[in-house]
Length: 139
Image (cartoon, rainbow, N blue to C red; front, side, top):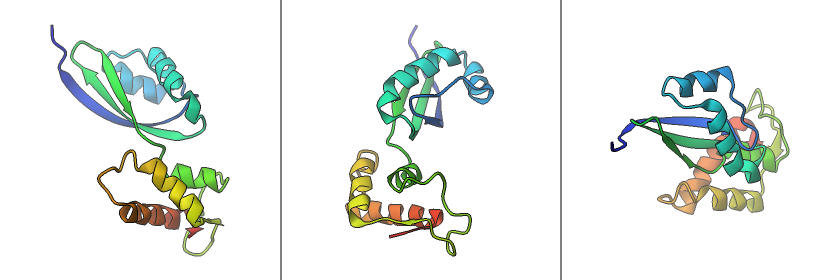
């Protein structure tokens, strides 16, 4: 019996310490995937990125098997970690939380380049600036 791709689910999960919550279990359970085993496998692969939010594409096949593609941490998560902030500003255009320098921006570009390989550095920089602005971070 060949395995046929049924669904692709996009999830953002905490790296290295994901637990089978009721929400995650209900999403995976309806496709016959054991959420405990999934979390163990995911945590093993993301242990080096502990504390980051990692987007994944979860492919579910007809024989109830799955595979997933790990992406780079979200841009907002990278900005918050670099500036050592817990969350962005409630009033992003009035209250500012921090300032990104060129070194930090280049560090984020080098990380995000793996996912955004079709974009130029200038285009990735615009994405970072937009995310930073929505978090109340100056650049």
